[in-house]
Amino acid sequence: MRFDVLTLFPDLFSSFLKETILGRAVKAGLVDIRLINIRSFARGRHLVTDDRPFGGGEGMVMKPGPILRAVESIDRTKDRSQVLLLTPQGRTFDQPMAWELSRMEQIILICGRYEGVDERIRASSVDVELSIGDYVLSGGEMAAMVVMDAVSRLVPGVLGSEASAQEDSFEDGLLEYPQYTRPRVFKNMEVPAVLLSGDHEKIRVWRRTESLKRTLERRPDLIGKAKLTEEDKRILAKLGVKPGN
Ligand code: 9D3
Image 1 (tube, rainbow, N blue to C red):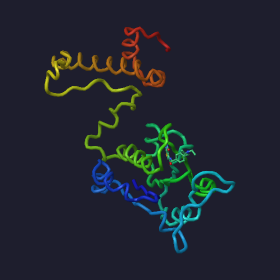
Image 2 (image 1 turned 180 degrees about the horizontal axis):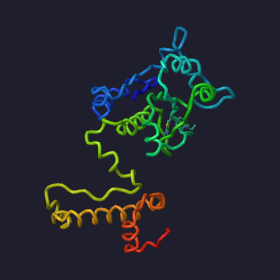
Image 3 (image 1 turned 120 degrees about the vertical axis):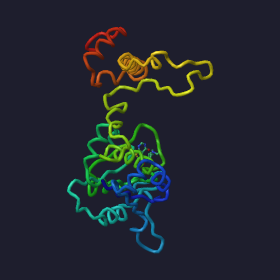
Image 4 (image 1 turned 90 degrees about the horizontal axis):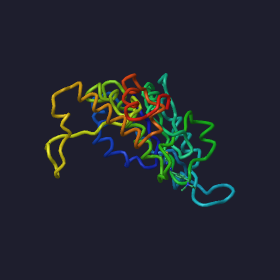
């Protein structure tokens, strides 16, 4: 998997790439990340990358030329290659999209700054526009890191234990059950006895019940979309949820 990141602030990525699981994947040769400074494709004495919006208004807009030349400088020998624009107007990134992107060979991420990028970049150079959620960031870099993190850990071999990606919360559409480690008593709070019982079947059912309870309470919107087994439906019935709900 290869990521080409187009940004005005490549330095923002350095600790992220050094310190995370992605850094390890890069070292292991499973992921290749190239940072491309859009400014190096600007022209003129001052290497300007932004300009005032036609029609007036606050702030600055990223000029199309430098971004277009930066995209065109990338070798796209890869078969499965996509250009993503990180923008508040994009589709909200989620786990199914992360899985889809993990099947790509090359992902080109364009990080916007200022009030946004010239509209003609969308038409000429972008396959997909992505947002990471409904809040205001000051640029696309953090969003690009979020996408790279979520996608790369699904690439075979990147995660330490292969099972974990599949076991994750959101893969079955439910929130995770509560976790405990030592000490057994902390601030007068005990670890639930079932977890110390050694009865693996009882533990499995308790965890599944807690997952369902937590999802019902905190994210009722997820229950309808979740992959529920017959056992889940029995547990939900016991929790007072009517079938088909
Ligand atoms: C406050 C400015 N907004 C109204 C004029 C527009 C605006 C422009 C540029 C708001 C944010 C940004 C910068 N954000 C991103 O580039 C961005 C983003 C985000 O802000 N939220 C969630 N996902 C993303 S992906 C890229």
